[in-house]
Length: 251
Image (cartoon, rainbow, N blue to C red):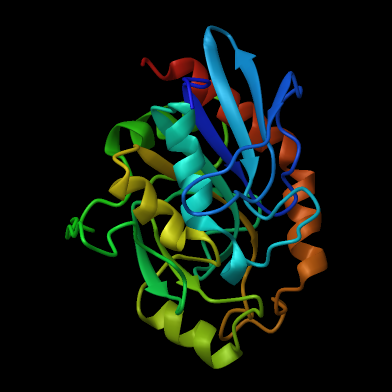
């Protein structure tokens, strides 16, 4: 496919509409079709490609998302970097619903997902030491400060299989391990981007406290309705931040 876009954006739960749909591309890849059509539009002097990772109708639960096709489609379009907002849960009292976390590491607790392009005969062993691009993270941190958005400048996200949420015991374990954020889609999305040599950043919008926090009876276990409610309430803030980051990116 010929060049179509400079920057890719993946949408998460409650974040299916991002750009004026100037052009929609129905594409195919060696790994099948992506989650949905890709919307292409201009922001300033940059072409941006937006893809809802769950599909516009939320037809793909986290464990069935065609991650390899989604990332490869972005590569085919020519994107130079990817911004990936996600609805996420907090595992720490000071990380509150409505906050943003600019993640710098992850822990994989998924299974059975197609998580690599190197299945032979070509084989590579990439480093997982820096899964998120440091330069993009810096731009996101700057953008949050400039927009007066409450953000945590680092955090480890534990990625669970889904589609169910954690048990109380699991959530307690994750917290005691020192992890900060919980999500269902960051793996293998971020590592596939690294295999394709596409700089990638996750912006986690905190929607809930997972299965509640130990010792605080007022904090109730998460529900799907609560996740979507908080994400939708902050949708404009997410969009504003992404637009600001895009303007700061120099390709």
